[in-house]
Image (cartoon, rainbow, N blue to C red; front, side, top):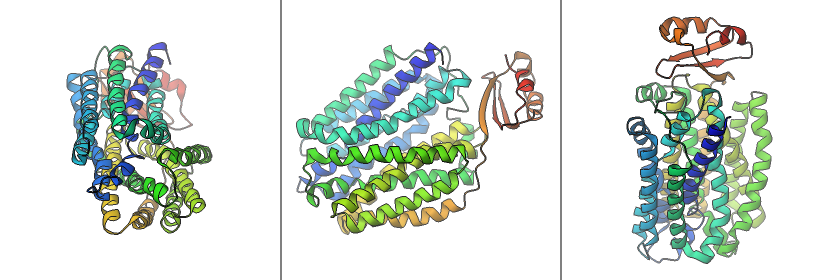
Length: 449
């Protein structure tokens, strides 16, 4: 990558991470605060945890499409301002828990994910775009881990309202990064590999394999969010951990689970074992939920189950986006990723609400057993996935003469040995390809500048 692309990757990763950090910081401490209020039920706690997922899921695709029309930076800056406003509303809530819920809903309305990815595509060359996207995508996992470890400590010294003030400040920091650290693109283009194209929503939603992957990320985040409606309370009331000491559980779990999930990720891609390892990970999550439900009052079984859960979670968090790319058409990849991300945030909302409801009416154990039941149905659905094909995505910049007759160029590209799928984007001056290892690179080079 050149200097501009490196700057883009680092700056946008920072913007994305400060926003996600602001969302995740509340996850391990909000149940503890809600429990201290006599009129707050577990259902309201779950609603407060998950409500941002509803507004995020509702607005992500519309705001991504809007950024094609009015520009990326105005949408991202406005989104961060709304996020800061939501944090401020929650920070001033006092004992009014409904105001916290309203603040969390406002936080989610600052849905900048699609616009951020589109801005990254505007600022990078085709051959380096995937690297930039990967750098930005990694910030979600990093932000989650940092939030889970630091939130209990921040909560001890600043309180939950102090955390909301911090998240508001993080949003303002993101605005400064957008204005002064992120370059402004020369032109805004709806990139098929990274942006959401309105005309491709229907094909993305009509693909049965993609729908099963969307359901998978929905259920994964449903279970995770439902778990966190009760796990912080279990650590405090049943295992005797002081609020500030919860990080001592989270930190080793995240480090060890990351180390153990990396070899699975390598095997899945290098040896083309994604589907069997996906099914195995779903089973691991299901076993973890059973152990959590039956042994959450016993420290070591609970710790083992928590570790198993995040081994499976980390693997699927990394591999499900890869499956979106493998199952989607070259034209619909960016749109399919937008739908996938929407399903992810939808799962967060449903997980918070359903987890809170079950905890209110049946109990904590039942929330955890619910996750086990869900994984059983999920496993059966995932078994029906077709074996993914491991083609590589390539984007090439076409010579001017090949842009004059796109249909003819498409036919010629499909005759190149190793080119399995192709699509021409004349407005971008590019061709999107899926290729295998037998690619005739010399012949393909005749099409490129």
